Length: 514
Image 1 (tube, rainbow, N blue to C red):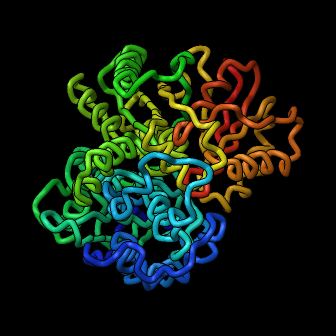
Image 2: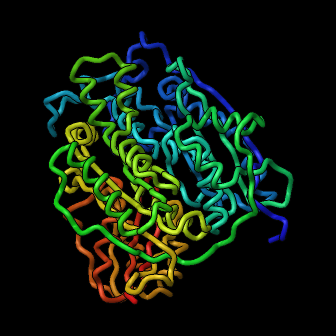
């Protein structure tokens, strides 16, 4: 790798798309009902309709098609295996759920009428999480590296995370895609797509980590657009980073029963942030929060139940109460480290661990708290019922936390290393898992199919481990952190195999206690 190479923005593009008029019937164009398992096979046939049904998806597709990413990748060498993806959005295509609100009202049963299984309704629920966008973009661009989702109001943070993953060696290139409705025009979605890659060629400098991470309350699309245009703002850059020191787990929250209500769920997150601050012993503490759905399904259902208009339902579906509450608590406590939220993706806690490790490795802060929270309430339950999700009985609410710090400074800490990639690229970690030679292994996945893939990877690695039975409790976005926490009390080396079709797959390696 040339000495002069550094992370640079080598390509960028913008696009916009308009939602179809509200007066058009939601079921227009769908003459046939399909079972859930047939949706994936028919998705490509819906592209023409998707342009009007799902403007976020369409705007993202247009922006990415203008990047010339494959051509650039072939010249510089990062495409495919060593390229990752960051999606930032607060709205995604959640507005589509509001077009058929009656589907989410009682009664929801296993024998729901077939008319509730129209393709538009099922796809609308599937598009509720931004991991669906990540899956589509990764398939379009052919990326196989890390893929993660951030909220759309975190400013230049997507560029910072892309740089972190490149500097730490997790990827040679990252595609950053941000999309949300235009301010004052909720029917018009705007997208900006950026390629960040380590190269010696010409390009736009990536903002320094300190500059990018200080913009965590600005809307991403205009913030990145202004930066690309050379507008006002902090344009500091710094030297390219290299993989730094290893990390250890300094503290882990003890296991706790499920939160009893939404108030307890949010309060528990705040308490764990306070406990993490005490464990770190300094306000130089970064915080990374992980949640697949936050409380957005509950807000959307409440709006539907009170008969709100579709724009209000869509707005409520994008409201992040858990992550937003912790961000405010982070500010109230005067913490000087960055705040990053990972949401809309099942492997949120695995990706949060990777971000935390890289923040420490690159010397941004001396300690990072990873707080993962899932709430499985009426809104999430009804959405899963519409999808006939067979894993519904296993899904639980939870809040958990770990504090990571640099290795070498604390007796008894366990060294941790997270490897992340697209789900179908994780077999590349087999050699590292075998070399780690764990004494205990566990598997993590949001769905039964994901869990089976995680178990199959353990089997293919020919590890001398006892069989891992089906998990009786799973968490929508926090499962990887729960599995890591459960492994900390084991006497030897441990490993957690993680698979999630909508993003957040990899392996977590834990050394034996020192």
